[in-house]
Amino acid sequence: MDLEHLSCADDDLPPAMLSLWEKMEKALSLLKNSLGIGLQNLPYPHLCVPNSTLLEYRQLEGRKGLSCPELFAREWNCGFPEWTSNVRNYRPSEYSHLSDAISCGVRGIIAFPVFDSAAPMHCRAVLELVTMEEKQDFDLETEKASQALQAADLRINLQPRLRPECFSRDQRAELTEIASVTRAVCQTHRLPLALTWIPCDYTWGAVDDISKSHVRLCNSGFLRTCELSIERTACYSDEEMQGFVNACEQLFLNTGQGAAGQACETYAM
Image (cartoon, rainbow, N blue to C red; front, side, top):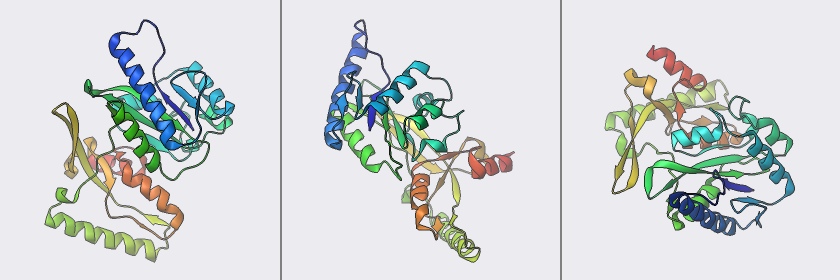
């Protein structure tokens, strides 16, 4: 597994950046120890790789740099982790290093926007975890990364979820009915998976120097600015779909993304 944050070593770094650099080094050291996978710092203090193949991938990646809408550029803007079980799920336009990643055996990848307590509302770095195996989720890695960063006075934001208190009694009843219909359709037509995406939105605010996110249901009249989330509405007969359902539960689908997002966008217009 390759662990990295986006920064460049420089003797002339201002104090704030030097402090960030030191914090990231501490977090990386703690993270590789907690994951217990024998990572080595070769040859840079901010880069930990277990073999020469991933080092080659990182060198190729570094030479090409970043461009919008590159994965890391998206992370700077969105503020939440982005991950995929296999980089082959990306289009070249979404991940410019796709061909290099595939040729070097890269499979699962997750990128965490990193925030500093000194500037809690602004992304200060991106921590990238790369694996050479396909993963259904990064739950363990997310937990370990969060703990390591917190120990270094840094943090990551996890994707907010709709909580039970967000729903009124009528909305909970509607969700139950939706789940029943979804289940019936899935079973009647022998579909491997059926999902219902619910429009919602989240807002950011700072409370006592800690960023807070609040998620609420979104009125259908505002679908253009909403995210879509599945909530207790998934039905699947194929156990292999569990990983995909887990990913959908953790990530919002923006309006215009995928079939569901495009359908909402069309409806809103």
